[in-house]
Structure formats: structure tokens, C-alpha cells
Image (spheres, rainbow over the protein chains, first blue to last red):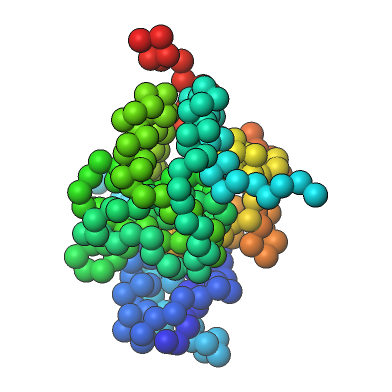
Length: 78
Length: 249
């Protein structure tokens, strides 16, 4: 199975994945990216007003294959 | 040259950590007939739905207990270190409700479940020590439910690292709580109920904060006090002292 690398973004803070995960294909990598993004949001959003989270996937040759992003904004209603 | 250590020595030490045994009971445990085998990482000692006919005792290496969800995703529900008897949880059950696999290459002593059942019934001090160990395993399960159900990713991962450090230290298998972490990020993820992606990010952030230092597979902790605080870690649930309750009943 091919290996995919998942770099994670929390606003400007990028963490590069140098371990990677073996997955069947890009479709499965997309599922992993979505789950990871939801998990990151669970810890990052409480207390935040604006936040942009992302998971960027690259293949074994470190070529980008998928980018995902979640933007959050909280507004109190006047 | 010192004599080769008895394969069940660590089991005795593991039991006596909480329940000191009279000499004849200690001898009776050591006299349990057993077969010593070396198992590769990933090997199973028991699978869900198997009848537990033997009890695996971990002599060296690490093991884990796991259950699978309907969609095939795995939850690691417990980690085991040398000295642990892997099938106390199955001691008087007809069918295993979970599987046990080696995390690393490991030496395992297999004892017939019948012999262990007999020993537990005939020697009350041994039966008591096994019961205490099973109660502590239940306490660890409760802590894991709390960890996975209510703590954020960072706290969860740190809590698990603290637990392993303290358990290994109590058995004399770690120095200053640092040890070889025998787990891949995927296994770590399955133990804390997170994706490997999130675990990877969390470990890197912990490293950049100076809370953990990793080199190859070993992990050490420069500031244990700060780490414990970050992991919401209180070792009460491990009950590492001799348990006096019931001694004079």
C-alpha cells in the first residue's frame, strides 16, 4: 500500500509529518484527513473566535495530493 | 555466572508488588508447569471467541489487548509489560471477549488455565494476589475510559506516556521513567482513540515544548513534574503499594 503524509495546520503553525501512514488510495487518505481535521477542531475551537485549520496530504514522493481546510468564526448576536 | 532467571520470577514480583506472598505460596507459583515460547510482534496469544485454555505470562517484551468495532476499526484497551499475566481477565470465563497481541517480539510463558484455576482455589494467598491484580486492571480500564472519553488529545497522549513510565518503573524496568516506546503512531492512536495524524502532531508539539525527548524509539522526560501536570496524571489508580485491606479477614 502507498504511504501518505499528513501535514497539519493550525492558523500559521504547521507541523510536518515525517512518518506517514500506509493507506489503500487517495480516497482513503481523504477520509483520514477529514477525521483528523474534525479531531483537531475539537481541541482547537473551544475558546477561539477565529481559527483556520488544515490537513494537507502528500504522497510518497512528497507531491501534494489533497488539501483540506476548516474555517471557524464565532459571532455574538447583538 | 548467575543462574538464568526463572521465567515466572517477574510474575511473582508483579503479584508481590501489591500482595506479599508467604514463601510456600511463592514457591507454588514458581512451580507452575509452563512452556516458554518466543513470539514475533503482531502474534496473537488469544483471539476473541476462543476458549481460554492457557494463560500467557509476559516474560519480556510488550503486549496489548484489543477489540474491533463492526467497521473493523480497532481500539487498544490495555497495554501489558513484562511480568503481567495476560489472561487473568479470562481466568474463570469460558470464552474470551477480546484478543491479545504482541506489541514487540516477546518471550511468553504459557501456563495451563486449569493449573492456575486450581492454584487460585487451593492457595488463598495466591487467589487473593490474583484478585488484587484483576481489581487494579479494572481500575486501569476505568482510567482509560476517562482518558479517552473526556481528555483532549495532548492530555490523553501524555497520560498514556506517564502511565507506562510509572508502571515500568514500579517493576524496575525503567530508569527515571524513560523507556523504549515500542509503539507505532498507529498503535498509539488506537490506544488513545485518535487518528495517527493527530497523534503525530501532538508528539511533535510535545517535543517542541520540551516535554518529551525522542531518540529512535526511546522516549525520556526532562521535567517529570511538568509532564504529570500536562497529563492530568495521578498514579493513585495504579495502587502501587502493598494492599493491606483483607489481610486479616
